[in-house]
Image (cartoon, rainbow, N blue to C red; front, side, top):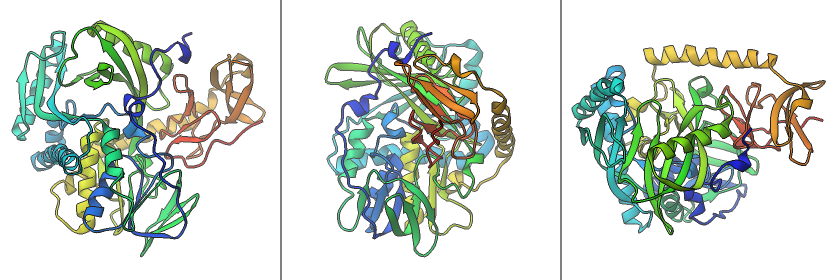
Length: 501
């Protein structure tokens, strides 16, 4: 069995490795602002920047350090080309909403460019092309339909049979005038603009709940914040009063940063099924090729160490890989109908907003979300409001709602009949075992010491599963993740796993 220690590369993202750590203060109770924003990623920091520019005071509240969550582990493709998506949008949402989605994401690229230029943020922003391609003749017709849909919506697209990739493709849809950037350099630049004049960034301040009212109250482990409005931008909505857990599932995917012999292909690339992504980045050592893939629902990945090795195998089959310098993984939310939920958190809400469900395309969707939330708060029309409406309902949603509910029920019931003998847990391994205390998440360290936790996720009680590559306990129902000591790595869970034994 291959172990995490045998994996190649530095276990962090290139974005974190090439930027300094942050040290914003924790909350001091008694803060009152116009808008409290829960989450210090791309949505939260962009929304805070835009709202402060409108003359409002803001407080960004982050459980850990800003831009170290999902945004810190992205592949950072700033493109309106979201895989095979626009043909689907036309068929399921109609042309007006599909066009609104396309325009919102194109505008998001321009907004990142504008903010970086206006504030002098050196974030390696550059315009480039984006491709979705297939190597299979079986998928040519569906990809051609995607290209025709993109053209119909006025996107800067064309059908091509040649790309800068060093291997042949059957067909590709090319989008011009898209962009790449360094997301942490960009967002740390925005973060410098936020504190002052009654606005704040608070790190190491976990939100435990919020109440909508006049004013709204945000509850944290360090005290309360009063605010006229609340924006829930915590990737998965914290304090899930609107039951987004029944309408969103979480998935994980894996990334390698590799050096290759020869120049890296210019542009951003995503394959049809199975989906792999490619883009380049130049650091102080030269060109780095960033490769992503091997996605799966959180808690259902099997041996996640093997997923890294399979991604490396794919990389070596397609590129002349010289070395693997980085490896990391990320987590994405997927809504029932594949379009993000952005807007008023419930139909009755007047002061609370949400942004979630970016399906792996968070760079433009997050920026578009921040622009939409800004417009909703200041009372400005935004054409994307209807397509992103979190409270929409359609036939696609109903079908996926039933499927998602069935998956959760299967785990809630079935996983309780699956457990192993504690003696079978090997050094460096974690398993859910059966003891006198019930189901226990057991990890045996290399020195033989054992750590045991409750195997019941603190969110809704599903049985967690072992993630071998990240050495974490992951919930297959709603995507919460926990460290070896039981602390929360990823929501919707707020409380840690309870110690056992």
